[in-house]
Image (cartoon, rainbow, N blue to C red):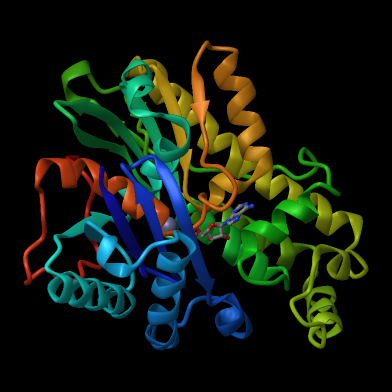
Length: 378
Ligand code: KG4
Ligand code: ZN
């Protein structure tokens, strides 16, 4: 039996969690910084580091307390090494290192993206059933990443091959930027999802670039890759706004909700016309269709047994519904993280650490933050 305490501080959430044997969630504490970054419409790295420093001790204490444990009962400390904001990562790493050294327990360094994949494994795959669902294709879709991985497990060790990535903006970043452009709150994903339900997803045609490569071995025909590009759709929304002279209504909307504390969909709906709601719904639908289409094409080519969809954008219900119905019609199982485990958390870090704990794969005292840490092999 192993009790692992995970710590996550890669972006704007300070989180700690205790997981038993990689499967049983004993506690899960997340302190969000949304209120701090809200006025800026995005994460301010300097403020994020300061907030982590303020929150890390009480968050870890609460995670241990909620699990009904004392700190010295923990068998190992796991921490996000990267990718993420260097200053934010360093807060979690330094604290995890201090705990491990003070209590003479092992320290395990975890890739944040591997954590997102294990958020799904933690809830849906107990150790006996996981083998049947492998190999799997994992789509990690968040504010910083839109990555496709082939996931294998051999002799208890997980391995990942990166077969697709975003070449510019991540899908979550596109949600955030389009929300900001339309005078909506940060983070953009949750508010766009709620407002999109009031619009027509087929009202506005949105172009998405198809990334193609010339396959030398197979002649000169260009073949679509599994890479993504979302900066084009963001520009398309901007052009649409300019073409239809929507700026004054956007400014009026911003002014109208400026005094509202943490505005909700109902607050915005009073200041949104059907034309803008249709644009929002069409934007969401285009992103969803692109994510689902490329993932299913890859799943078919690589003949995987199941699909894993994780990361902040995986909390989007439209994305979940579309993945579920299209995957099921092809006989593929699709797994999502449950409530609270799509967006950043430390349970996924503690869960990802368990196989490394079993293998004795520990970090040494020199481990440091890796802002661009890749996962697996290309
Ligand atoms: O995984 P996450 O919490 O942090 C990163 O690692 O980036 O993901 C945050 C991202 C943000 O861009 C946010 O707008 C997006 O996930 N997001 C959503 C939804 N909830 C969060 N995007 C679409 N629909 C949602 N419901
Ligand atoms: Zn994340």
